Amino acid sequence: MKLDDKQLRSLVHGAYSIKERDGGFISFTHYTDEQVDYLTFNTFYSERAVYSSSVTLEFTGTAEKIAFTYRVFGGHPSDTIEAYADGFPVGIYHTEGNVIEARVEFILPPGNKNVVVYLPLDFECGIKDVEIDGEWAPVAPRETKVLWIGDSITQGYGTFMTGETYVNVANRALGYEILNQGIGGYWYDERVMKPMPGYYPDKIIVAMGTNQHHSADKLERVTKFYEALDAVYPGVPVLAITPIWRGDPTSNLAELTELSAMIADVAAGYDNIRVVDGFTLVPHLKDYYFDLLHPNALGGHVYGENLAAHIKKIGF
Image (cartoon, rainbow, N blue to C red; front, side, top):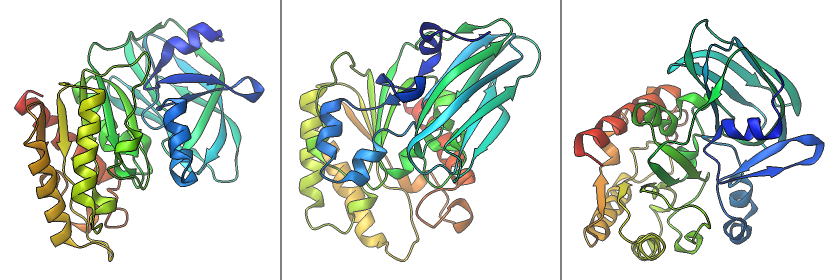
């Protein structure tokens, strides 16, 4: 069965808006146009703001197959598209760097199940011509909306498996309706905090700072960010994750620890902000990292599991 436009859009989770593209494709955004316009001060950021990290296609039923055509509209084509059934991976499609458009097909296990297809995290992905063979029904938006703000680690870079980013691993355990605003290279920047018409989160998770732990103005940036966040989303519960351990040649653990203390001190001024120590979430071992900065698939999995357990423990 080929899905019509309304049926296709009913599958989509994790997008702020859906845009029609050339060739009959649709792509997905995490930010408002105003926010993306601001981010054009550096195209490195504005390009990554429209990648499809944590965007999913979700349905339930006895369907035996899902297939669709994808196109790369910008970014790094070497990535994955992954299918999960009842939280278990059942298919991984490796996109290739020299392929801009291709057809993807996942054979699904028999019986009734919940299916999640994770779109690529490291490029702007458009899809069209979605077909589902068998009985299916879309998954309704989940009750709790969570805005996830972060850098390349939150975007998922380094895992090279879109289903194993820490955000996606954690959310399989938590069951939020998430909007992943992770941008590679980003930092505490109050100017990107703007209202998003039609969207208001129930909770916010912030995981940033590693890209500015050398900066002389890091305390000012953190302070102004949380002031802006509180102005846009007053009183919304916030979980601030301090930077995770890193061991790459450009890192300075003393400065990273200092920044983490600054984040905790600023957060202490708000009744609605809780802090989790990022150093407790990923082992301080090279085996868990792609480059001693970004967690690999193993590191992303452990990070996500530990974070989900912590969130459940503190009742966030």
